[in-house]
Image (cartoon, rainbow, N blue to C red; front, top):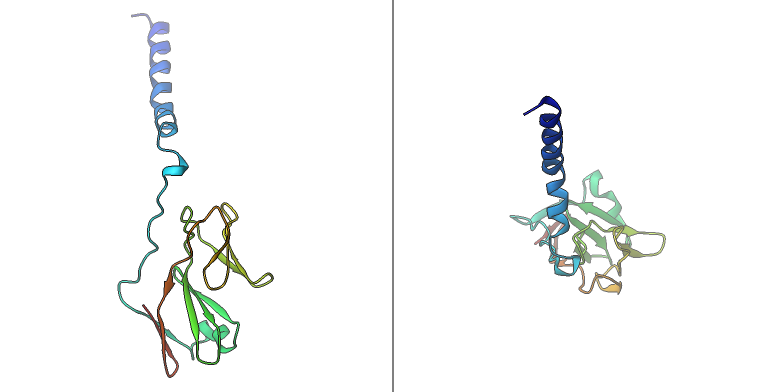
Length: 142
């Protein structure tokens, strides 16, 4: 085999190896078949100390904080709501928009209420709700 022929075959083979992952991933299932993973469930109950400066925004009604994959809202004098931050459409991380009072997904523009209900899709199911119990200055989320 001549040197030029060897270089051509080497370049051709190398380009196939480099493009194979792209070509094969294009043949994978469509977005319609996507099933989002469940949010990272806490292995144990999540404990929030309301006296901690980290959670000082929960000191007023309407305040909210993030703790891992969970959003926590203070909804009343002694009531709180905890929701998953994982969008039910394709698993993107949602964020609360205090300006419009909704939870927004930056990936495909799904919008949720602060109770987790879908306002507009493509998400079709509500955000996961967690149980919240208050004992003194401690919130337990499970």
